[in-house]
Image (tube, rainbow, N blue to C red; front, side, top):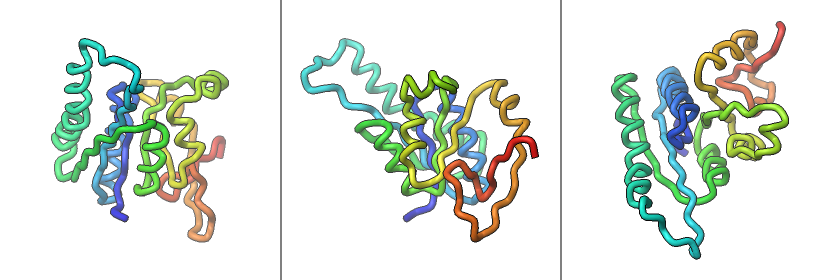
Amino acid sequence: MSRTVTVGLDGSTESRAAAEWAAREALLRGLPLKIVHVQEPLPKHVDPLPDDETHQRWTERLPIEAAEGIRLRHPGIEVITEQLTGTVADILREAAGFADLLALGSRGLGGIGGFMVGSVSLAVVARAERPVVLVRAGEQAAVRIAPLTWVRLSPDTPTPKCAVAGLYPTVGR
């Protein structure tokens, strides 16, 4: 297994924030960053739309352009891109199994809304066997993260799914 920090990228603001976070984490760990973009196939009975060619080109360019930007902003980082086809949650969960951790953008639905919608992030976190980090974009992310403190886990403590780099979030300590 090649060790990487892996990020799922769909082009959203949140997934781009996750890619930046993952790049910084990869540098801290001395690991390559793997950018994974998953495209769900169209059902066989659906005819392609007139602008599908444009969408296909955008899909192909998205991880390449993201990798180029990350290399510029984080010199020295090794960036790998991977384009996959399939069910997004399943492919990302599988990618998490081959990574030290997987970073995903969070759409910020939260609470009951997030459970009712059944987001990709929630589906991946629920079934992943490796740590998954959900990254929020914008000012709200800093406000929501600030109250957390981090405690180091001892080596014999089982690592919770939400732990990052052996740290576990606790609120109000």
